[in-house]
Structure formats: C-alpha cells, structure tokens
Length: 104
Image (cartoon, rainbow, N blue to C red; front, side):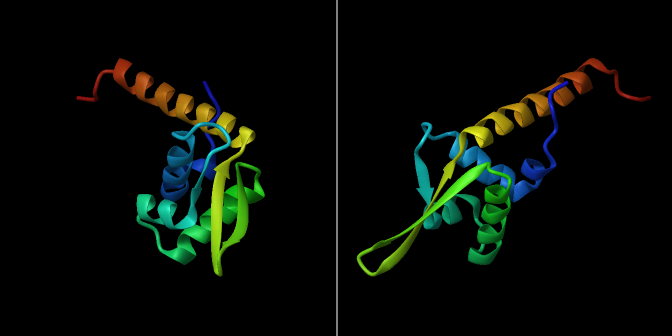
C-alpha cells in the first residue's frame, strides 16, 4: 500500500496540491489565482502554503510587479512525488473498499 500523507490529506492542502500538480513541472500559480481556485481566505491559504513549504512540497517566490507584491507558489519535485504517493494510497483504499461486500 502506498504511503498516506497526513500533511497533504487536509482538504485545503489537498486542493492546493492538486491544483499545482495539474500544471507542468516548474510552473507556479499566483496567490490570487490559487485563492480563487481553492475558495480559501488570504490568511487560511497563506498558513497552509507555509505548512507545505516547511516540508518542502512547494516553493514560494515573492516579487514585486510594479509596486504590487506578487506571490507565486510552485510544486517542488518532492511535493509532486508525495502527491503521487498520496493519490496512490487513496486509490488503494478505494479499490479495497470496492472488493469488500457491504455489511448486512
């Protein structure tokens, strides 16, 4: 069975990781776009991105475009691997549940 990842499993972090995983490697999403995709508030999204960054699953790049700050979040190679393992774990759980007959 693949490794179940408690960091990724939290619902908002799972949405963040799924959104970033859908992009080509090395491509990131701006914070505002990620906020819109996930439906999170600024503070909540920021806290979860920080959690993912602390374990090395994402990188955070901060820059200024004109006078406006711009934060871009990119899935790191380790994050892509961890996400694939987590999805495989979920698929194992689903496949196992499909094999077992329902309790009467």
